[in-house]
Length: 400
Length: 103
Image (cartoon, one colour):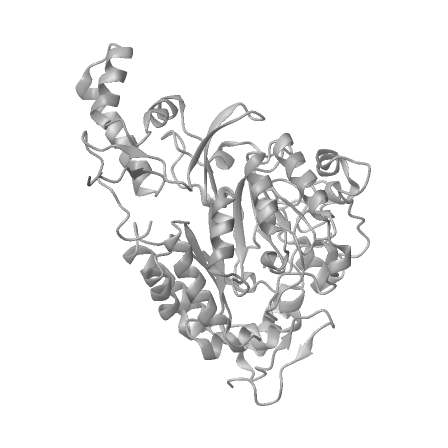
């Protein structure tokens, strides 16, 4: 999923239509984010091995109630949040989603649905549209059922997604196709791009897997080779030029193969927060993987604005004051803010270290070499995401 | 934006915002914004004034007449600016046209 960030400006500044966030100085202020991600549940019928949810999933019993979510939505609108992304898990696994979308509309929030689509019926989608839903983003695991359903760990998922995507356009809702890419499906990219055009999508996100949580467990089966990545970039570049005005394509590369680390979340606690199923306010969806940080909940006595501005977890890695070398004296420290804190923690054991995706990290060489070896290897067996801590794919179930 | 939805703005067009693009005054930041999928745009004061006239009923020609009278400006210059601005929005998928009535 892509979040509003500086890279998403759709117009050059000064033409009167500049993206708001690119004009706002975020250097010294922590203004209320324009968009917030509401992970309303971690339940999901799919078992994608790169799931962005934490390995420790919130159980259904811990989820905020309907009334709690409605109160959260009202509070978000009051403090100046403009857009709400309903995500998960699978958000439509919650029976009260239509009610939540209607409440979001009532308090003036623009709502996006980020969905796997497999639980949706046409009636449910129409009810969501009537409740004021403004945009639908559907994840795809490939361009045909065999490979895609294997990744999703759910038979019939792909066919259902195609059907729901068609209903989305019939209901005149704008559609984003989200294609998560990795070694097992990169060869399908040209067909996935054509599928997005055929589905009359407005946007396509070609998002290479980012390797933390579940994806880190599955890195050996998912990591593309450098040659595959180069080919991917060439295909995307060609399609972006060819489909200008028809399909907008956003492209995210795996940061292992980038020269500089990504400005993760636009910087820790600068532009974005998300709310976990149990109501924790987090700087990103993976932040709970960092042990030793206490995240405050909407169930606490504090307001959401207070938590965003004052809580210890948000302030720990804000700005540049927390940095050690090589970040501390680096000329790029305010450009990428040292990369991703969760990745630094997962790969080095200290979230305050430089993200090893950065070539200046002392661990970069070692990690890059390991990823290269994994990409060239033939371990194609997934560990599927579930509440039991993951289940290995059956022998012989994989394509390679 | 998706094929077949592109429009060419002329004086005869009767543009309006599609349902997924919403013009709204942001009370917190005290600016007008256009809310769209994964985007928040900040139109300038003139763009806002034009967009408020885009109701799917009024033609671009009517809007230009209105603005030329209001600002006592040369009609031709206003027309060129308004059409360029609306076309830019349309190309980004944030403007559509009222469907022609067939009855």
